[in-house]
Length: 167
Image 1 (cartoon, rainbow, N blue to C red):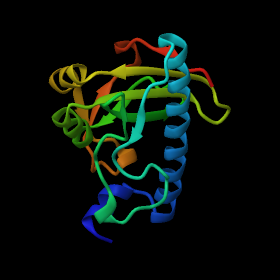
Image 2 (cartoon, rainbow, N blue to C red; image 1 turned 60 degrees about the vertical axis):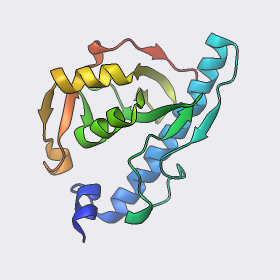
Image 3 (cartoon, helix red, strand yellow; image 1 turned 180 degrees about the horizontal axis):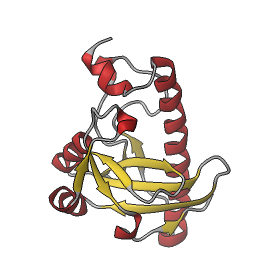
């Protein structure tokens, strides 16, 4: 296994990582569709959405096809989609990825909630300037879940304003 794969798989077997990638992509696609509905309701127009980073299909990609670019462009703005199942007391944002998103001028659409039943999904938008504040102010941790190989910025739900996504 390459160093890249060790980093990408964390402490998971390749098969588990592949299942997690597919599930994560399904969640991201659900969030994008729900966010479009939200946008239409609030702004009365359909936003322009185009794929950006990887192919967003959930298929396993070889190293040379993997990208850390933001997932989509929404009305021309780079937007990374992050999903977290449940309602955790703290949220982990992978340091390397957040640092890259800041450099690229991207924003984050973060969604938490019950993805299994597709209900009670809440979102917040973390704009690029807010990401810079996170880097400046937040603690860094190395969670055991990631094999203590990945640094994360630790943030808390009460740091953000949340809206409910229509599902």
